[in-house]
Length: 242
Image (cartoon, rainbow, N blue to C red; front, top):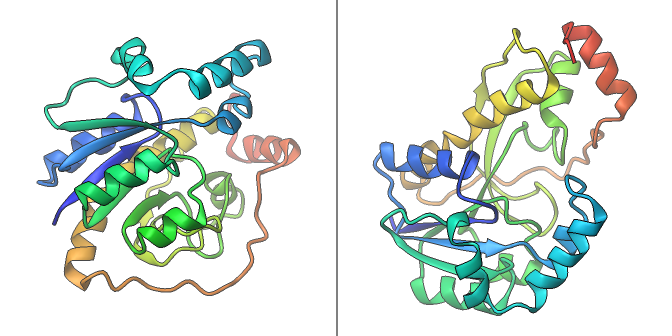
């Protein structure tokens, strides 16, 4: 099976984990495409102050890719595979690269919103991971909701669709809960570490079933980004230190 890895952030942490676990399990991507975040995604990232976000967003928008590739060379380490760089997963350049290389499966990690045109051009090829059971647990904060509601924690792999977490399900499995965590961040990190280690399992399932994914029911989720009050309830419930 030919496949590629599309990464929307620096090659470390979960991105590196995905690559290493794929290779370890005999699934080495044919190439890697690094997609830089678009203007909207940068300015909405509250991890950075506004006076950093806005200049960075403008720079990423106007500076040519070839210059950004040189400036951010430590951002994209050499892994011995064919590598490309583009701006935004939905850009003409990204679509041109993916169409030319023509992989059967395109694994997405932290690429932001994938629009309808891109999803239709690469129907049942764009594979993404989700830490929650679908369709009940769509959107964000699903790890927290599973702990708060005493529900099983799931990892789901789906063919990406324009509406959030509504794509056909390729592979779904239970994840282990960490009942000895000291923080919400640790609970989330443990869940996503397990999740992103399972892309090879999803590829095996695709090969086994011949791309026959399970269509989701159109149930609307009632769980959205968890309110800070409920976060505190969860901390007290799990007796977390912070």
